[in-house]
Image (tube, rainbow, N blue to C red; front, top):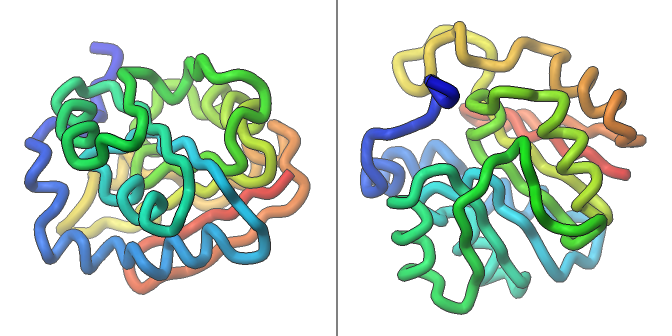
Amino acid sequence: MEYEKIYNQGVLKLRTPERLERLEVPRVVASCLEGNNFSSVLDIGTGSGVFAEAFFHSGLRVSGIDVNPEMIEFSQKLLPQCTFELGKAEDLSAGDQSFDMVFMGLVFHEVTDEAKTLQGAYRVCGIRTAILEWPYKDEELGPPLLHRVQPGRIQELAIAAGFKNIQIVELEKLILYLLNK
């Protein structure tokens, strides 16, 4: 199966109070938007639209893609003012610099081609790509260690893709990578 690591345990499980608290959505969004005047974002692996919703309420034009039709349907109903489509992180159809920012919330560890994913994100973003990921350690919650991104891997791939400045924001439970052009 091409997407053996993808989340498939139901859309509402992605919106439990415990999970939302773990995601630190307000802090993540504020960190992503810091230092620039963003007007648009592509939310790759939008899932239940948690971050799409937060970016929309921050005044951004939001588009989202996901490989799971259930997620797209849910997010479109939640945010009818936004655009959601089926799509893969590795095969972005958007034009060059179509969005000020590309965001991937707990999805990078699921992609089948990490290098191609970051090259595509670099191409379609005008300013920044932000990647929220699990730390590389065994935990009860989240994917198994085998599916997590090893330390230094995102930075290595980001440099190879052309990003010039990389910031790492350590959150309470997660890690946010800010990759700037």
